[in-house]
Length: 115
Image 1 (spheres, rainbow, N blue to C red):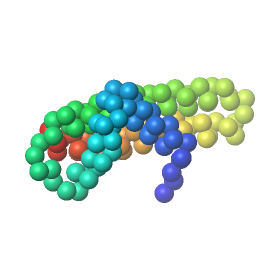
Image 2: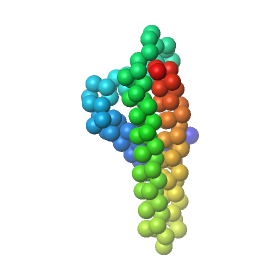
Image 3: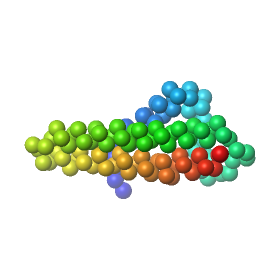
Image 4: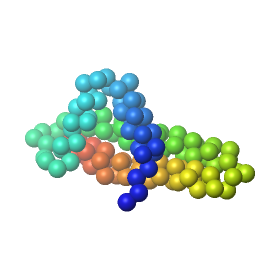
């Protein structure tokens, strides 16, 4: 499996940085520790934490758009160097893929389970 650490280093800090700005330290930490609800049932609905995950879905999409444009700019600046287009295209595609995976496999199931 190929894991592009540059793309992951773009997505995770952006999603949780925006969560930190929007919700503060306590709810952001609860959203990180709330990953346990992926494998264990919640004892009761947690609408506040579900709202955090719903917003993180939006932040994940924003991060994908930012990564897409970063990859696009990298492609357009390296048009004269064909060897540099491949890695730039990989960033463009992988940031969308990782964002979709994070949304579909983590944030959306947690949102549905806790709401």
